[in-house]
Image (cartoon, rainbow, N blue to C red; front, side):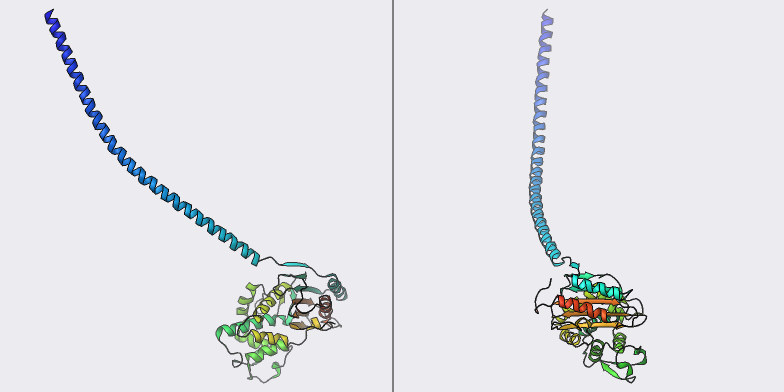
Length: 351
């Protein structure tokens, strides 16, 4: 019995000792675990603080960028609105009744005739039109836009139009209007003299001579992107639309209204031209800048382009079939109807 009690006491003591050791080990492990967790928590806390700080900075940057983007978009929107306003679509209406009646009368009179008419503000943004996209032989009306090109080229290249000369040769003679074709080969003409004859009396030889120095290919590179006439390869005259001529004359008006080197020269040259059919029978006093074109035969046409009273632009193009009557009369009568309709004080608005 005593032995049993001693054994029980011994087992109890051992059990208590082992339990004590387990508690100490657990406590030690717990302390180590707490220490490691404490270090990790601090590091995570620091990293989290850094991340939070970066996130805040990023949010600030993003907010600033968004604000800047919003401002840029707003500015872009304003610029687009301004551009949209600047590039406002043109507004065109049908011809006034009295002008349309005259057009109809000429169509009835000349069977097979093609007629195109445009009456525009000087910026080309407002006006009245009839068959404005129909291709019609343009004759010598091509020379006005070409003169603009020549003068701009001379300005850019520093060419003095009063001293620079071009020599008349046989290759420049193709008949038609003008006087240079009758002059002696080898005669030299200044660029100004050629421009004066080409526009003033529609001298064809002057046109060919200028084209020998200022190629029509280069002219096409200049005028076609502006909406002007596109010439086929080898053509000097060809066909054009009222829109083509309108676009060319808008550029002419811009140039003569500028302070460019030769702007006054071009204005002078197109104010001293002959054969302004648009104004032939008008009853009101009329000032004009213009260039007409006409031809009779297989390439038959009568056309005119004129700035009237520094107020509005008139384009009349006709392909008149061979006739015993004057092939320029459709332009004369339509022009009269237009100007009599819009006989307003100089500087007045007609649109």
